[in-house]
Length: 305
Image (tube, rainbow, N blue to C red; front, top):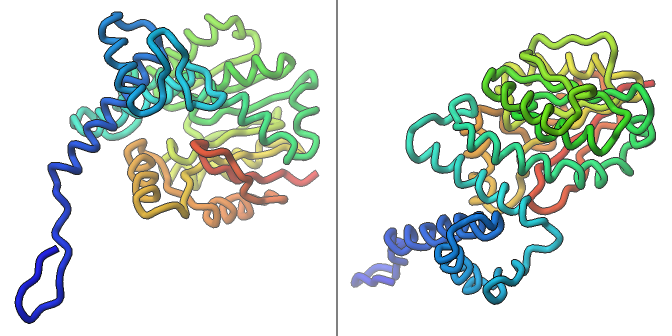
């Protein structure tokens, strides 16, 4: 605090170097978490990484399990931490700011993190969505995965519901190549298909019981044009699930959400804007639903029966 004669005391500007050092520790801690959770690093480096996590209360003795991570599996933690690092690195390096310019490693890490979160999220949401669980388990059920990326969430959804057909659409050729590889490796190529398709031009006559639309990865013009098209492609009683960034946190949290969304080339939406889009598309029972910490915000709407 500095004081000048005749003036009120003022608080000194934050020490930028101290701030950078704190953020530097956070970045390296994320890398350490990825390395230890993945479990395939050199022994000496892995031990050093575990020591750093232990200092933060996240690791037990050498060789012991990670602690303080709840029920998350090590693979889920590794994918989530790696995805954050890859995407932040792309932003900082200037190699590309939008999702189309990301590396395969970034896409795969983000896809694996999404897939590992998909099944618990589906289980969490289904009780709030009428008879959707029964519909998805029935023969002939169909799901649309907009912005499918590397297809990881589409594969995980098909594995969760063995009777369900899944269509994934994306505009990125490289992502679709990776998706086809993942689908074949999982042995679900008889039920999961992907195609190059802009949601702004989407049309389907067979209908879907559920559609997933992630606003943080879809540009505003495509979202505005495509959401009504997706809603129209739902079967009567089907549900559209819109994922978007969480707002209403601290100023830093909200600013980070907006930065991530724009870096992905997506559309910043809050609950009110998402509800408005779904209502204007003719859906009913439109409402946000609560999601666990770390999960995106979700707003849902149902096609009238």
